[in-house]
Length: 290
Image (cartoon, rainbow, N blue to C red; front, top):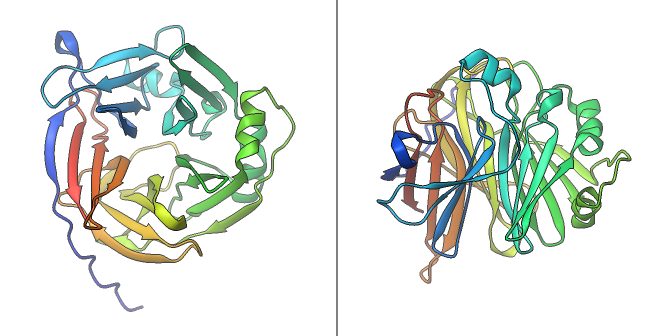
């Protein structure tokens, strides 16, 4: 089998660590929305949403779910809601659990007036029936469609793109409990970095039906267990689902969240957040131009 050519590099700058007040920090950033001069960050091991207003001041937290998570790493991993997706919806934000375990099938709709929790079991059951073990890592709304990105694992479930009419999101927020099969579901191959397959970690809509994804080369065969990361990449997909271009990010960081804005000259201005799989170290906010 012929080896794949290496991906062209995309330089990135580190803007800031995702520190909070009193020496705390976000360590497992997994989703990002940039709006109104703020960076909103969801983490897969917190019950809160983090907000960063500039490059220097500590971030603040908004509680999403009641209770407290265990401090010990194994117990915390077993109990966490595993929020992996964050996207803008109407006058607020929506965060989704990954679905990789039964306690990870909840979503929250965050608005200025409050936080509404909703159940994802009816959405995830048809996906699990088609794909096996699931791990939803990216979500966005585009052209009347709600798009979810399934993170594949070597030897297991594939990378996949699932779509529903956006009315399905509205039904879930209204409490729908019936099975909600996707209107389309297709697998995607993303290539590899240093011999390790790339798998989706996030996505965001672009103009004219195009969209952008982040992917990490994490050496694991389990949808729950972490593995050593060989690096991360970005890709642009056209409305027909074809990958038009991919770029490799520097180092071996695991990028798990992306926000994009098109500049006047056509350049994509990207903000990215990382998950280092180390609770003692802060995640980072990165910047790149493509």
